[in-house]
Image (cartoon, rainbow over all chains, first blue to last red; front, side, top):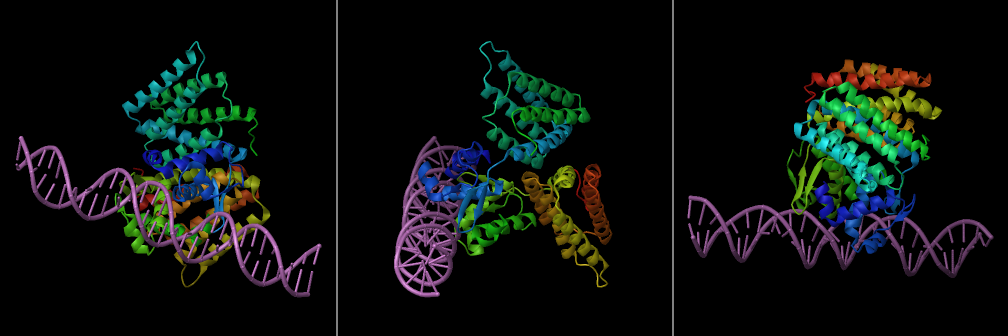
Amino acid sequence: MEEYQDHSLGGRVFQRIREDILNGKYKENDELRENTIGKELGVSRTPVREALRQLELEGLVTIIPNRGAYVTGISHKDIWDIYVIRSMLEGLCARWAVEHITDAQLDELEETILLSEFQMKKESGFSAEQIAALDGRFHSLMYEASGSRILRHVLADFHNYVQTARRSSVVSEDRARKSIREHRQILRAIRDRDGEMAEQLANEHIMHVMQNLKKQGYEQE
Amino acid sequence: MEEYQDHSLGGRVFQRIREDILNGKYKENDELRENTIGKELGVSRTPVREALRQLELEGLVTIIPNRGAYVTGISHKDIWDIYVIRSMLEGLCARWAVEHITDAQLDELEETILLSEFQMKKESGFSAEQIAALDGRFHSLMYEASGSRILRHVLADFHNYVQTARRSSVVSEDRARKSIREHRQILRAIRDRDGEMAEQLANEHIMHVMQNLKKQGYEQE
DNA sequence: TTTTGTATAATTGTATACACTTATACAATA
DNA sequence: TATTGTATAAGTGTATACAATTATACAAAA
């Protein structure tokens, strides 16, 4: 899928509109006209149509037949709900990873953590972007290691969702450090083949992120 | 979304291909040519393309740029994984429903159960289709009652997925009866505003379906 | 003023045309 | 024979054309 998304126009348009919705450029109930967007991006209506149909499936856009496409948007409650769901599923993911992970994947996780720790030790201060990318890599590797196509799919979707939507929000240095420590603990539990522990740690890891989120005004409702 | 799916050609083509993959007409790695399918359904390539792009997002089709679309298919393990995930999320759904459900929704759930019980009492034997439809309605109402757009979306997707894929498989009369009893228990817990109980019951409800699945050869791996 | 009807414009839905990429067949060459 | 090159065919990617539907403006009627 990722392959396709980069190579085709339709795929790029899809990603672009997706981001513009999640980062707030297009606001709730905005009408998305095929022609307008097409001109804006310098493409014809066809790839735009494809993109809008895909976005509808993701729930970011509502299409009314013969009328148009409208931004559904994503509320703070939506984000919060995603985290609640993720906290359960990331736990499940870690538990399954204990049974399915390969040595190569263990090495990759280790490497990701090492790189993260290195970033945080830099005298010149850490790059928030780099840290976010490494965090994404860690979770992505975990999804892969679960050995479940379905679980990987749904978790990757959610992760991508909130990552884009929260790009503006701040992650404190303190939280970043703790997050990496938690990643290391999860990895250790998986190495030890302790499924229970891995599940609990992964679970709590997401809940800690949620606590941080709460401070920034994301509430349950 | 449902509105659109019925009214537009693209939507119908999407549903059609989706079913043909899930019910096994198109098998794993089959190539889906836009022209061929278009002719088969009497439409042009455009709606077919839209459908294939959407199916890719759902994970049922893999698109290789400039090459074509191939059926990804859905394995027994996939179905099993979906049930594991569902058992957690249906539990969460029931817990949330306790806090968000309206009186009207309670009535609708009650009605659905009554209709199910009526079906099972019929002298002429029960209609499996009717029972399946009522089961779908019960769960759909629960998703709505959770008050979470996100949870509803992901659960509805999964439910639809397995429902279509398992249409061939048999549901015993015994299992159908027990299922309805379990629905009633869940409803009672929600009425009593007992979130813990509702969660546990909904959780177990799905696990019971899984036990039934196991008998029919669906295994963990 | 409010409502209704109608012509026009704007937008979506679908089909088709053309460009580009990839697959296939087959000949030329080693 | 095995390999490579090339022409042809087939298929996808995108743009455009046309049809169908819906929105808008404005006049006519109550």
